Image (cartoon, rainbow, N blue to C red; front, side, top):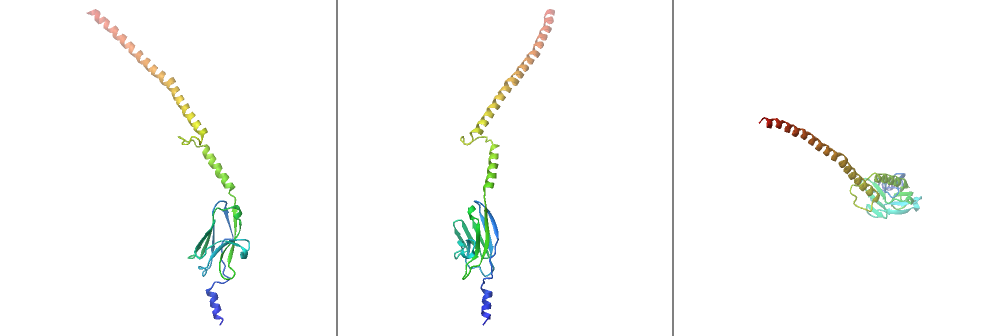
Length: 212
């Protein structure tokens, strides 16, 4: 008669079979946190849940599979991967007040087995401040060639326009003070070279006219 209860203990999971997972996890405020718990063979078809509270027997269930391998409620979702016996819980849009004690567990008749997971949500202030500082520095050294929005950066656009006006004025002054005198010098040199040649030709033609 004692063989039947012994066989049932081998087939049906008992209270000694735990569900395991990470003891503590951390997430970033306004980010996403994923927690994975594993359970033993024989619990694949049982409902899975994720609850919040310091005590397993009185914790509040946030989401459960509800007869399927997937469940979702507000910012929390749960998925049961029965092939590898893994329970995945995803918490989105994390808040500082999400820091608490959670449990991943399996629903069964009697006391549900569960595993405690300590969740800590870190503030995102330091990360946002560093990102803002890097963005501000990059914008300070960026000068658009052709600004599309005249209301976006009036100071940068004005400096860019003044720079091009100054460059145009410099080119004009170089043209006046360098190129014009150079052209005049070349013209004077041509005239100076041509004058003696015409005078010499006149002096050589006079004796020939007197001999005739």
